[in-house]
Length: 369
Image (cartoon, rainbow, N blue to C red; front, side, top):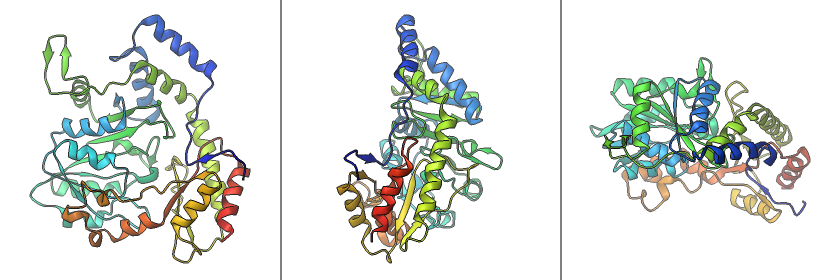
């Protein structure tokens, strides 16, 4: 391998020459934040691109999650997945909500709808699934459960930018869907996030909550937070949106190359390809099974020793962290599939600039064993 480090993901950056005119306009307008022109333009552009009616931009995805729960006045217990980034469940704790962990499906690694009903108690008020790696949850099955038990449904769609099902955007499902535009995401604004809202009234409440609850200079209607996206972040989002289709096509090619190169390697399993009309190729997870000659952690270290920085997304499970492991639902015997996946998963580098030669070098190291 070369001395050049290869990380699991790297942001797709347009040229500096493209970005400078946006910065000049910000400096000329003196509008740096508080819903400025670029902020408004990005909301409109994202609604059009994603096929949704209303979207509220945020400084980051975690603030968006916290505010989404606030906006629906969620309390009590919320059923969620242990197999995610910690922001999912942290947003519950920050709202004084008790997470209830449910096991995942072995094929999709999403929340298993067949396990949800058994976890519902009189204190359950909502379900928060995650579209893991951008692969859609079984939205019909989850919605049916939410409707039957009169529960709110909030999707952590941090990985699901541009993901669709047969009827359109996956983001239209549930009461709210929350996106992340962090620098590691396939669409990013350096830092950022958004809540997809079903109607104008909901968006208005969320816009108040993300700006301290202000309606005007002298009117505060809610105990809001400062979750606003700056004009610099919004302008970068507008610029990146111009390149997003090319980024998606390049990521798809990287995904396809990996799948071809990995064929026939005993003990390495890929998740099923969700298909180009569904997937956004946000991540490329492999599962290192028991019949692979070395452990997942040993393979992780071998790649790292060769300047390839794969990630064990998601390890440890959220339910294993100190603030959660005392919960009855966090016990490992309740989460056998998630526990197993966390010991096997390894996300390989995937980003548009990753060359076929670099991919071949990565797979050659995996094939060595």
